[in-house]
Image 1 (tube, rainbow, N blue to C red):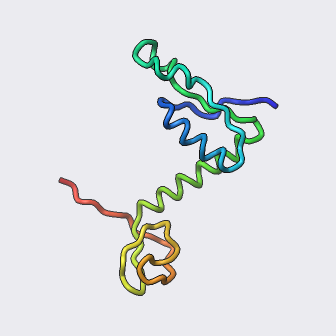
Image 2: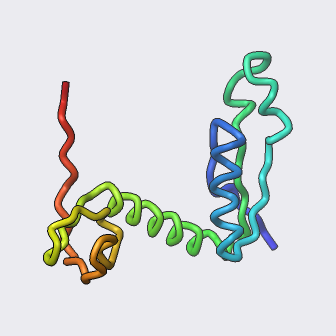
Length: 115
C-alpha cells in the first residue's frame, strides 16, 4: 500500500487534531515528524513541522471530509432567526434550540461591531 503525504502542520496539536478527525472516519493516518517538534528553535522551523500520510486510495475521501468540516464551520459562524420565536440560532442547527421549530436553510451572516 503506497502512502502519500496528505498535509503538513506547524504544531503537533494541529496534526493530532486533524489525524483524530480522519481516523474517526475510518481512514488510516500515519503521523511523521512528531519527534522533532520539541526541537523548534534549535533546528530550522520547517524541519519541526508534522506531516500526515495516508494510503493513496484514501486521499480523495480525506479531502471530502475536510471540505465538509470547513462547510459546517462556515455555517456555524452564521445566524439563523427562528421563524416561530425569533430566537437566533447557529447556522448549522436544523431546529431552533429554544422552541424546536424547523429553521430555514439560508442563514444570514453574523455581524460584529468593529471598534
